Amino acid sequence: QSARPPGRLRSRRKPLSSTLRFYAYIRRFSNSTCVAKQCRFWPTETTTTVFIVTTSRISILDQRVRTCSMCSLCDTRSNAVVGSGPHNASVLLLGEAPGANEDRTGLPFQGLSGKILTEALSQANLDRLSVRISNVVRCRPPGNRPPTPAEMDSCKSHLIEEIEALSPKIIVTLGASPARALGILKQREPLSSVRGSVFDLSIDASTYRVLATVHPAYALRSRVKVLPVMVADLKRASDLSLGGN
Ligand code: URA
Image (cartoon, rainbow, N blue to C red; front, side, top):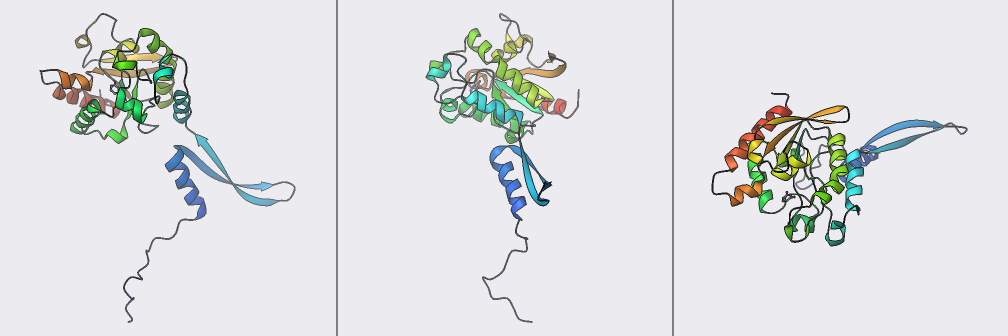
């Protein structure tokens, strides 16, 4: 038997056909789905492959958010911050509003709060890349001030659209603002009155489950141990996303 010359070993993997390469490209770069159909055209009777690309509702929403000018925060932002994570995630985490790091990158929870959130998710056996992470307000309020009720109202249509398009099994509110935005916490009530509780939220004909927990920034500021509380809540959210009670 003649041995193959070194360096000339070929991969056993078959090269992808151009159709499969096109699918892979669409899935990787556009978060859209693509199907191929063989179509026969009249009157020539030639058969051609036609690709039908469907853009997800979330991609369309993200595009709308990036160019939104519904409130004056658009004048001071560098980037509107769209949600991160899969477009079919069963867990949706909601923060309040972007800070400086998020404004720079256009992605939610990038700074120290983001590090704590990633750590809490991993301790709860949830992969950050498998959950959707978003905010009630999509543009940074100048100087990191809390968003005003009017700014929250302007952004509400994006929030409702994201919830309806994603249809998550569980929504986790991080801190008081998102709990107030979804109406599970009254204006003057403290977060402690709802933290750890699960609520039903009705939007049109659908009902979604909402679990309130603390904001990761609170774990930074607070002297009491907040991370274990957050991890316990995220574990519960993970169970609920799998159909538990
Ligand atoms: N805090 C939030 O509420 N959202 C972010 O995206 C970052 C920090």
